[in-house]
Image (cartoon, rainbow, N blue to C red; front, top):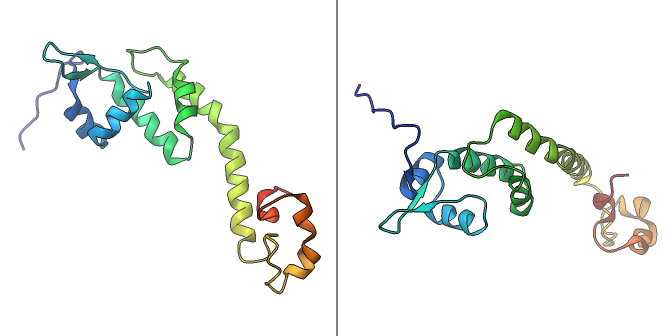
Length: 154
């Protein structure tokens, strides 16, 4: 098996190299850059060049998005990190701690949704056999719009 020579740690990466290593489309990298989530410098030929720290930032973005954290929250969290260096373990612990309570609340809501999905959800249709028992005369409609039994944690 041929060995691929190791790139110097300080080597800047092209947008194509970053796309290949991160598994993201070049257009996604451009989008993240316009949103201020990652940054690049320009070569003399006006081509984007990225520091290797961008790979960790992209990894964090992908993980955060996978668990449903909006880009606006990711961006706000990244504002606490210095540009131009790879986020450290301590940085990741700080970022993930910021998101933990929100994730716990989402897990509770999803568990509630999963457990109540097959029965009356309080939407006002009164068509399922259990609806008149759980939501007689659509009393939950007075509490607000939507599927009231799914939108509350109690």
